[in-house]
Structure formats: C-alpha cells, structure tokens
Image (cartoon, rainbow, N blue to C red; front, side, top):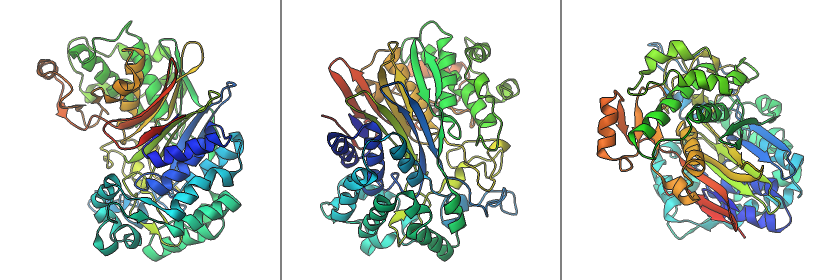
Length: 524
C-alpha cells in the first residue's frame, strides 16, 4: 500500500512492488515520480528525509536535506535597516544545494532489491510520454504564477501566460533526459556530470550561489532513527537536521504523563495538546540544528524524565504565555509526504520538499526541474520569523555547508507486538509536526480508523507567535469560549498540515490522503 500526494506517483511505486521490488525500491520510485507529476513539491532540486524499518528489524534514516552553498554567509539576507530581504524566499539566492537525488539513490543502493534503472523507469515514462493535466495541477500552477513567471520554467508551465489546458497532455522531455542520465549513471550524473553543469550555469545566469564545487561535495547522510515509545507503541522518527523526530517524541512523552487523554475536542483536550505542543516547540526552536555544527541535548529532550519536568509547568486551569516558559525550558511548507508498506512488512516514511510551492521559482532550463528555497529555513537573523512564522535561535544561523533545520517528520509506529502499525507524515511547515502527532494520538488513544484520524479537526501551537490555532469548524463554541477565558490567544485557521498515511487493519493495510489535500493511495 502506498499513499502520496499524487496517485500517479503512488501507482509508480506499486508498479515497482509488482516487479519484485521492496518498500525501499517503491519509495525511491515514488520520489522520482513525484518530481515529474507533482512538481510543486516533489523534486530533484530539493531534499528530504526517509525513515525505514525492514521486516527483519533493521532500521535506517537517510538525511538528504539541502546544505548552504560555500559562498553563503550568516547575514547574507539582512538589509541595512536590520530586516530580512525576500532573497531567502524567491529567486536564485534562495536555494540550498539539492540533496534529493543523492538520498534516493543512496537508499536504493543500501536497502533496495532492484537496479536503479528499473526503479526510475515509471518516472521516466511519465516525463517522456506525459500525463493528463487535471484541475488540481492547473490550479497549483495558477496559484504560483508570480513565482514561476520570471524564470525559465514559464515557457513550459505558463505557455502564453497560462497553465497548460485541463485535459491536455503535459510532457517534460528535458526532465526525461535528466532522469535517463540518473538511471544510467546514478547520483554522479547529477552531482558531477552534465546535470551539475546545467545547475551551475543556471545559477551563474541568474546570480545564484550554487557552484559545481558545491554539488560535487554534497553527500546524503545515513543516520540511526530516533526511537521513542507511547503507551506501549514504538515510535521510529527522524533525527536532526530534522526537528520532527525530537519534537514528536517529546510531545508524546508529555502526553503520556497523563493516564489517558481527555474527551476528544473538549476544553481539556485542547488545553493539554496545545500546551504540550507549545513546550516542545520552545525546545525545538531554541536547541536544534545541524548535528555537524550544533551540540544538542537530544537524549534529554526525548527522555521520560524530562517529560515529567515539562508536565510540571502545565497549569490545570489556565494558559501559560510563551514568554514565561522560555527561561524555564530553553536549557533543556511546502512539502510532500508519502508512506509505503510492502507485502513482507517493510515500511518507509518519506518527506521531501522544495519549501515553498515550486521552491525559489528558478527552473534549471537544461535539466528540467525547479530549485528549492530552503535557505529561508535557516534563521536568516536569529529572533526574526521565517516564512512560516518560526522564530529560531543562533544554532540555526546560516553557515557554509550547513544543513538548515527542518520540520519534516516521517514517522513509523510499531504496535506492542513489534509489527508496523502506522506510517505517517505531512506537509505544511511547522504544522507537519503537530499534524503528524495528532494522527498518531487519534489512532492510538481514540481508536480512530485511518480516514477519521486524518480528517479529525486539528490544533497547532508553535510557541512563537504566541497563539493557539484551531480548525474553525472543528471545535464547539463553548469550548472556544472556555479557552479564551483561560487566557489562550485563539486563532481560527492555520491549524492543519496535510498528511498521507498507511495503517494496519485486520485484513491488511489501509492507505489514505488527508481530505484537505489531493493525491491517492494505491495498493494490491
């Protein structure tokens, strides 16, 4: 079973499974197919994270987050008045060195069964032969017209100034040639061959920072997944440079200090969930970064003992402003996620991103893909919010060769018997973390089926700005009134990322895509 934000990409993964591939082969196939069929977030010009749990108990995590170019400097986006420019969000200086191809090929080589050419074949076919433009694809391009139009991608994505007509066939021959080169020569084609040359030339043409030297030195990193537990279930999650795993595990540990969760949707539920989010994000924003540059108290933050200390700061009857908590606790987008499980029980959770939809807008004309705008995920100036409103500390400041902190949270949950129970992740900037946690809690504490777990109303609190977001139609008026009386600064909307997930059911697997998003689950 595969669930992703593109039914075409999910089908590509199932095709590889049916050819004898395992879940890792399928995940790599989905990753390359998303670069073709879901270019707003699927990518060759971005990066991501992959958490793997093989049926024999082996685990792995692949970190293929982008890195800052060697020419990057700490204050490169600051203007004379001390504010941050938009160059970290749009345009050629917004891009980090892409990691997607390195990560996907590394996972394929380490744990896949099939040759890379077989795994890339469905994506290559989609690019060469095309796919039919639907309303969602056309709407996505229209919504990002201002980002795409100034750069080379406008010729393909905005012919005559408008998206390709609904019902037409969208063909990407340049991207097909790029995929052909990767299929033949692996990651070397991207980082040291003609594709690298095309990226460097595009950067030179537009005034970007990425050079051939930046590409040649890039490496994906294989890490050990973080492991936590929640009410007898095991949680396998991504370590830094993703903040997702630490924050997911810390939040679940705090919730577990309560014998049971309050009634879903009640004042007590919102109070507990929101306060747990707030405190975990304080730690996230103040301590986490690239492990090659920052020493982090990960063991402490993910410990049950620390969760008890955090719980002691949660009042029973009132909100606690973030400003009062920071001295106590600081010691201690747009993206796409897909979930894969194969017939043997191997499982893969993958989240990948360009950051904003269509990334920086810069399109590599001689290679056929958009470049990311991940430089905005650094603290371009510590204390200033990024495009998602996150306010982070100096541990996430820009430095050459550094991975920027991410909210991506690919997660695998095992049941008390040690079998895969849930594979889940999300898109949506910092809402990735809170949405992923809520799906896990919905499934374990509230015994929801997968669609209900995905569709249920959500909350979000990231500590700064100090506000508790909620789905406007999801919570009763008296509950909202009670929360306001408790001192919560309530904010309607902006509460939910969009999740894709696969969950074990009595007869096999259920796969589903968040009803707030597009995509599809495919199984057999």
